[in-house]
Picture 1 (tube, one colour):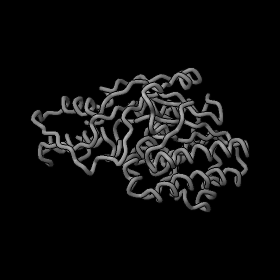
Picture 2 (cartoon, helix red, strand yellow):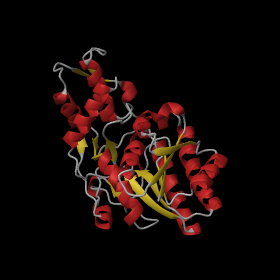
Picture 3 (tube, helix red, strand yellow):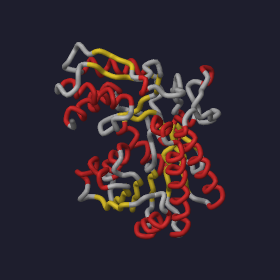
Length: 318
C-alpha cells in the first residue's frame, strides 16, 4: 500500500508518518517545500521517500502523482497559521486553495483513484453562538480569519471534485491539535517554549501572552494521527467530520498547567498587543459523535500528558 503525505515534515505530518509506519505493507512517501523543514522527520528519513514539491506549481504536483500513484493521500500541506493569515491574506488564500486544486487535477491527470483525506479546521466555524455548542458538522460556517476562509474554500472545492469527478475525498475538521513538535507560533507551544527558555536562563522570567480568555477544544497530535488513518479507511466520502476532544479549556488554564510544570516558580505574565488578533473566537468546543460512530475513534491521551510532552520537547530543543 502506497501512502502519500503532503507536508510530511510538519507537526502533524511527522506524527502521522510515524503512525503509518506501524502498519504492515506500507510504502510511505511525503512532500515538503524546503530542505530546512525536514527536522521533524530526520529520524524517519531511511524509512520514507521524500519528494521536494511546491504544491502551488501544478507541473511539480503532476510529477509527484505520476511517480507515486498512491493508494491513500493525506493532504496536510498548506499555510496553517491563523495569526499569519492576517498579515498575509493573499498568500494564505493562494497557497491553500491552489494546492488543493493542483492536487485534484493531478489525480485526474494520473488516472488514479486514491482515498484522500483533507485537513480542514474548526476555524471554519468561526463565530459560534452559545446555543450552538458543542459544534456539530451541520453548524453554519461564519469565518473570522483569512485562514478560515481558505479552509472553507478548500473543503468546498474538495466537495465539488467529489461530486463532479468522483474523487474519494474525506472532509475532516480538526480542532486545536497540540503536542511535541508543535510550532512556536501556536498558543500552548508558545507558552511551553518561553517557559523552557526561562528555565535555561535564556529569557527573563516573563511570559508574553495574547488573549487568555478564549476557550478551545484541544486534542493530542498522536490521537489525531490515529484519527487520520481511520478517516481514510472508514469515513464516507464527501462528508465533513469533526475530530476533537469534546471539552473546552481556557487558554488561561493551559498557561496555568504549564506554569505548574515549570521548575521556575515566580514567572510574571504580561500581555503583548502583537499577540492579539483583530477578531477572535470566544469559545470553540466540538461534538465528535459523528466521527466516533463512523470510525470507533476516541481520544485517549490526557491533556496533562500532552502538555508534559510539549514542555519536555522544548526543553530538549532550545
